[in-house]
Image: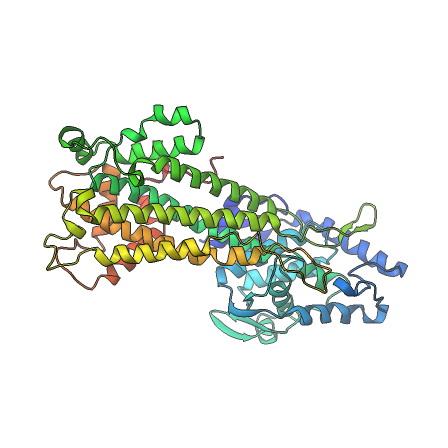
Length: 513
């Protein structure tokens, strides 16, 4: 039976969001219903008072001063959704759309947006039936929330646009009908509540955290394996060194590396037979670099967990007093900063791994056969996989420039400072995949390097990793079509199999904060 996550509005854990992203079914804690109904009742009371309230009976943005007649309030919300569904580009991946839907439910279910329970439950219907709105990836500047992408989600609820059903794109109205659902007609405030929010940026950034978490763990393993391949020392991982620096994540990474290398006969041979006093930084400074990366990942994960549990709508309904307060919770600056931190982390994980690959193929540094091939010259071995790793590392560096420092005014200068959170978060999955490929190349190169030390064996955890790899990729004893080898290694990194083979308990976690 697949995992089921029950959303507790405002109190979901990072593990909950990870499970939803990985495909868990979603239910909603029904205890939130009274708060939702109270918010909807407050909006109905405001409409009955016939006083102008932004987003309920006025225009939007720079048109907020235009009063809308009661007879046109439903049309107002529909027009808002259709006019804002202006996204372009490739659709968001299905896993991201499911996460967006769950994040939107978690926000609306807190009752501060003034939507009806029917509307919250209709979003849950989409999750229950796996009806995924087609949401173009481009068009958000991160304030007033992710307007254009979320408008495509809202449009699907009223039967406009398209949905993905079983991987097939069909008109939204047909997808709803096939599931026995009628298109919604929005009540006052509901279109705006669905559009306002940071759920698309947050979903993309959360997904990147979860992908970065896996590649980070794999890179700890491949870094340890590369250390053994180069007959590097584990002296730099001595706990006394890191206790003096005092960074907890550096201490944790050093502990993981020591555990991964414990019992290695290759490492022991270095202590007896090697005249090198200090290893290159790509080996020696792993705790310092990877510890700093873990710090950033943990901080970004914490920010995104908070954001995922918050309400980023505007205006907000306070049912206890009947007040409506306009603010700026839709401004996604926290998400933008978190996305930039994740980008830096992915860039550095890949950069360090690429340097270890470059060190291993350089015979003058690694003291292994040139380009890790038994017959260099006749064979090129790992010459070009290292070039590929360098190309990917360079691409990540180009993508890592902070998106959050940019801003461009919109809506006739009413929205004059924006977060660019969607830009910052949308690049991350591509960066994570680049890093997966770099670490996969390191896995192949490090395992090949260790082959040259036979009959000496590495540690028990690293030998399990080598055995796993060798079930999919044989040693490179002569040149062959190598792209499938990289693809097979990348699958092991991407799925978390490398870290699992090494022993999950040894590796640093985002939750350990």
